[in-house]
Length: 110
Image (cartoon, rainbow, N blue to C red; front, side):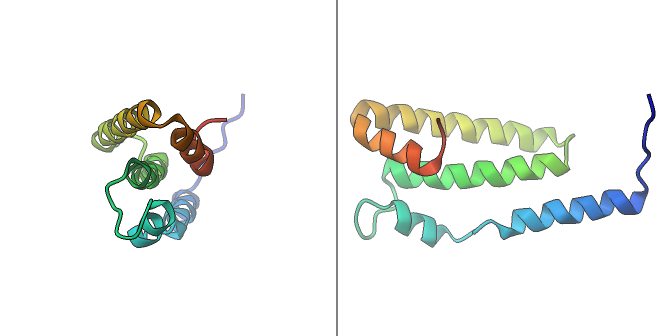
């Protein structure tokens, strides 16, 4: 078994690439709210909340790819995932059609 050793510069370049991917994500809350709002001025509907949490989960997951030992952020990620799951369960009980539309739009389940 041959191990390839990366130089410090190669590791830093890889981190820069991943950081660029994180910054490429649209961080515009207003865009997400507009896209998932049920009506104008809607910021608290389950759809908007789940969309915002999904965006946060994506950013945290990418952060953890770079910082594998960041257990504090890992715990925060698990809390956000649990919160999204609770909201999705609520929405499914409330209106199954809206739930299915939302998960297909966000690409959460296949």
